[in-house]
Image 1 (cartoon, rainbow, N blue to C red):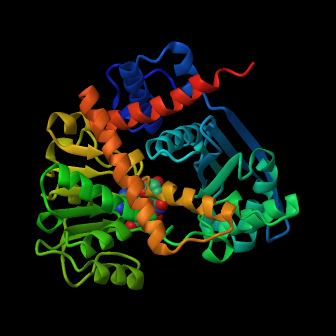
Image 2: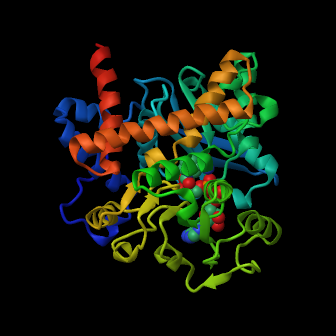
Image 3: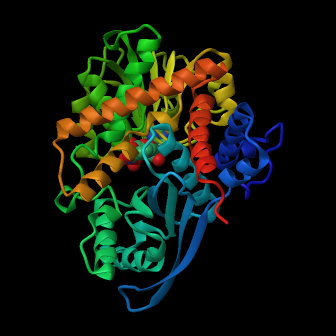
Length: 429
Ligand code: NAD
């Protein structure tokens, strides 16, 4: 990304935790392998469009408050931009830029015809009423609507936004264009044109990628001990689906702590416990892991970091005791830690492949909305499986060809796909 300060050869401690710099380094490494010329590098690093908008909102107490919103479209050469909208007090343009670029590479890895986008509103949803959130969403949508559209840019939920947010966005857009336009967003409620299987899609993708990774390592699911960090949409559902396939889930965590049972956790019971009590600790069928973060060092065959970014770092990478890491979260391993893991021979399936099940089923949702014909859950799941398995094979082939890690291979594959389209289309003048 052109806005990133150049990464120092010996990244400082601070730099290690900057996902923006991590990605810029990966981009450069992959671009070097591809021998990408400077002009194309500059094109692919630079967001196509960035929009910053003021969002005046009448609050419940009658005051007017002005919020700031962003939408960044990183690259739309392969199709409409795709990417979530997050609501958080610390959202900033740099972060949204990095996440938008990430979406470009993720969509290209699984070869769905989308570019990358991301949006955000600076606000603290915990301090806002439902009515205030609705008014923020509607005004934000109206403010960025000129660059949205089923053929231009299709948002989705992200941190602190959900199905309801997407329903308001869809309604606001539809009211302006004077027709119901379900394909303007994905991650909608099923009653409004959402897709069956969308909620489970990312966890299902994680399960499928773990299966493919283990196959490569010559292991069977029934023999695999799995550790999952994070028990939400990705980690919780991923763990549940792996449990169903016969994997032994030996440890799980949430933001409050971690639990372990070497004989295997009863995952449906763990998730029911979390639903009831709001946290994982206190589950009867397991013991507590001292210092929740230590869960990452639990001996296992498959480690699924599915919580937040920067969890595997230079501080713990040497102690990670697994054969395969499937990155459910975005950016859970820092770039410096990835190098250590590579040197130690641990296979890492990177986020832009491992958690791409969500955007893949978002693509199916968009297709269904445009067809006005809705698929069965079985069809969604089968199509997802085909995409994830093929993408895993594509990345493995590139890794073998260039003799690089799966992470660098995923970047090489995606950057090459975007660059190919760019070369064929040429530079519009
Ligand atoms: P979620 O909010 O549903 O769940 C997050 C889980 O992580 C919760 O169990 C939470 O308690 C736990 N957690 C939070 N901070 C933690 C910490 N410091 N240590 C341990 N656990 C912690 O979120 P999600 O949708 O499951 O997303 C998880 C990650 O996956 C994020 O990085 C997200 O960007 C990424 N992701 C999500 C999707 C999707 O479809 N939901 C798709 C692609 C990537």
